[in-house]
Image (cartoon, rainbow, N blue to C red; front, side, top):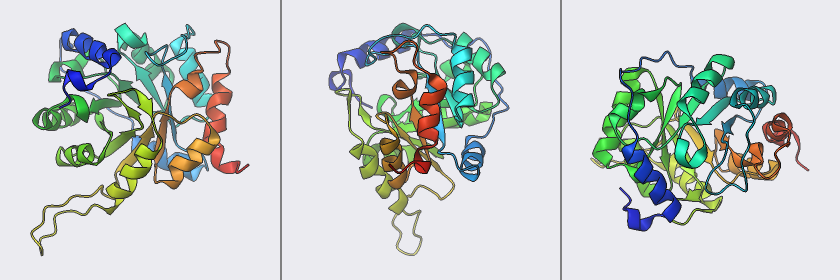
Length: 279
C-alpha cells in the first residue's frame, strides 16, 4: 500500500477523510446490472463503451457543476453512455450516496460507485452495480478480502491499478474488472502511455503453467479492461481502444467543469461515436 508521503497533498487529504467516513448500518444485498453485458451490447450497437462520470467537482477540476445529478446522468445515457460512474466522496468531489441512489433509480444502465473505500463496512453505505477498489490504497490481503466481500453482496468490484506490479496484485486478489488509471496519484499527472504500457502486459500474462511450475497470471479473456482518466477527445478514445481498452471511464471531458452550460449529451456522444469519425 502506498504511504501518505508518496502521495500528492490533495490525495492525502482525501484518504484522511476516507478513514473517518463511516459505513452502512446493515449489509447491502445487490442485484447488479452486468457491466460486461452492457459493454457487449454497446459493441454490438457500434458504440464505444463509455462509462460517463457524474463528478460535481474534484481537486483537479477547473470549477464545479451544480446541475441536478439525475439530469446529468440521464443526459449521459441519452448520449450513448454504457454505464454511469457516480462520485460519492463528499468532501473533495461534492458527491453523495443519495445522488447515486437517485441516479440508479432513474437510469437502466450499470452504475459504479466511485469512492475511496478502505474497509468492509464502507461497502454497505449504498447499493450500486459496481464499486471501486484502488490497489494503491489497500494492502494485498485487505484487497482480496474486499473483492470477496463485494461479490458476496452482489457488487461487481472494479479494481484500479496504475502499473504492472499493481496489476499482478489485482489479479492475485481475483479481479475480473480492471481499470488502469492514467493519472498518477503521487503527482496527479496524467499520461495516456500508462494504459498503453500496462494493457499489453495484461494481455500477455498467462495463468499457472502446470508443466513449468511457474505461477504466472494473465487477464482472462472475459475480464473487462478499462482505461481511466485523461481521455478528452475522440482521438484519445481511438488511442486507448487501439491499446486494448474494452471500455473507457471519462469524467472531466464530459462534465466540462470550466463551462457550466456545456452539453453533457453531446460531450458523451462525441466520445461514444469516436470510432465512426477517423478525422
